[in-house]
Image (cartoon, rainbow, N blue to C red; front, side, top):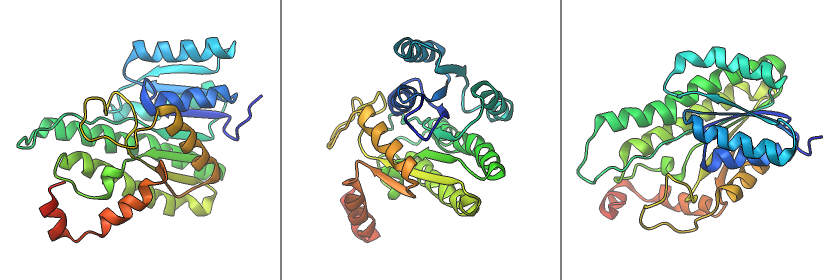
Amino acid sequence: MTNSEFKHAVIVGASSGIGEALARRLAADGARVAVVARRETELRRVIGEINAEAGEERAVALVHDVRDAGDVPELFQEIAQRLGGLDLVVYAAGILPKIEADEYNTDKDREMLEVNLSGAVAWLNPAAERFARLGRGTIVGIGSVAGDRGRSGNPVYCTSKAGLHAYLEALRNRVAKLGVRVVTIKPGFVDTAMTRGLDGLFWLITPDRAAEIILNAASRGRVTAYVPARWRLVMTVIRSIPSFIFTKLGI
């Protein structure tokens, strides 16, 4: 018996980090969860632990590289059939390769755009179409505070997240009147493989804490949620800095 309003969920990018934590929390609340990622070994570990803890099959794994957008329509339908429905779709896939200050690597940049932005469109478009037809459903996209301002350290990562934020806003405006919720999540620093080794991290939270905040925001139908909430004030200040000053700050 589920303790959550979400009974059938798919988490894209669920082999580690925030995506894995979301899958674990949803399954612990009784939901059936499809976990999607490209790393099969990690996926098998995740569903094995979830199902062992639940004492029944609550999680199913589907191996998929989000850069293979052409596979999504068929895979999406398969997931809906295997779970017996869908009421929550979360796109949590993302990459943040190391970029040197004087590096302009188009291959790395293209991969970030494919994973962080194009992959989200490929998965969330069919989710929006399905939910709009049903008149209900929740879509969650995991963006980043990095998408709130163009920073010098990794221009295309900022671009990919800013693009995701704009896409989610536009999608929300399209389907809100049809009973579909679209939630934009903007995490700060979360203790995941993506952030390990980075300098200057502060307000670091665990993936499980991030997942708790995200699911609360999704259930409440929040438009945008910063994770944790204190980042909202920080980013409001950062967005208000004039460009000529922001450039001199070199951040």
